[in-house]
Length: 405
Image (tube, rainbow, N blue to C red; front, side, top):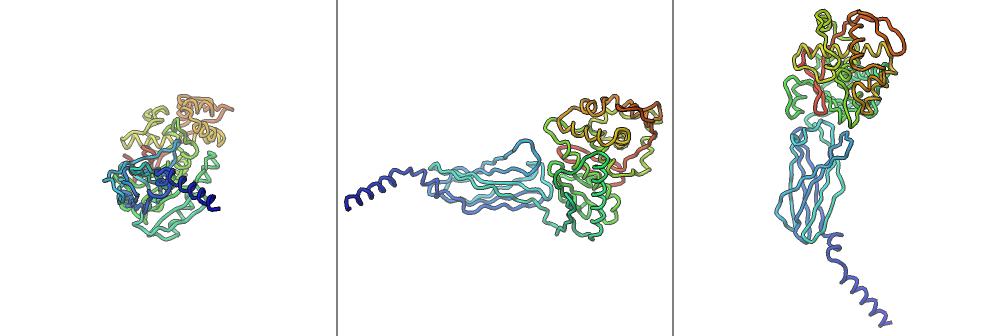
């Protein structure tokens, strides 16, 4: 019995002796004591880490990924500079200008990777941090896939905004087949000044921003600008709907379709802008559909005319060919089709063919021949009340009397 006990003790001793010191270290010595993140909206995000080990900690990296639509997972990594030691307390700040800023209500996941001199390595589990605008006490109202956040306004004010949004979604679904696939957030600021305070480099004319990759809209609506706010929210929301319906890694939409659908969703256009299209028709100064496929002019009158024509083009397609064809067009763009190819597949004509038939329609010359029959030409004058400037995955709306820069 004594001999067997001695042999067992020897076996245990040899087992413990032969165990790799690095393995023991990796299992429990290198450890994260504390980890946290603190937002400073909208400018930066502060990270803090405390760690300890039996050996000097030699390498610390922060990894993070922003929660937004992407066709490939993108992970950013930052190497933290510090003096190697067995106990470290470090901090690092992510400046929002580095990633182009984040909208209110967005989030990111972060985690740490550490190594020490003995070769031990620790990778923490991802933690999600919300990047919220904590300057205000937000309330929220949800209906379907739309949530509106607001402060400093009565609930009846927000209910009217929500009613306009839901009516626009219903109209889009009925006339185009487009619908929200994922939930969206709309942050209503009480003024343009408050909205611009939520942005890194705001322009003085910015009245609203649609962050299409995040499914978020930020907009400033004064208490006496409810009518403008209704149209603005509908316009911005439509951009989120169309983005969700057509997003793909290969191409985008022609500007006339993207902006025309947003203007169409607003409903009746303000009569004062009808003169822009009327004047262009009279002076034979209409912009070609091919030109309207690119970003619109920086000159105010040409830009407004571009929005007016875009609305008219969309209405022409919906009125003459119906919901089914427009939905087919959007689905074709989702597959990454080019501009001419998508039109040819859905309607049987390219951009030049659309240009010819639409011009005949608005000028009253000839008849519009559709793919499935002949339709009487319609004379229409359309004007646009507001517009969006598209770029860098967001859409900016001018806050004012309808002029765009």
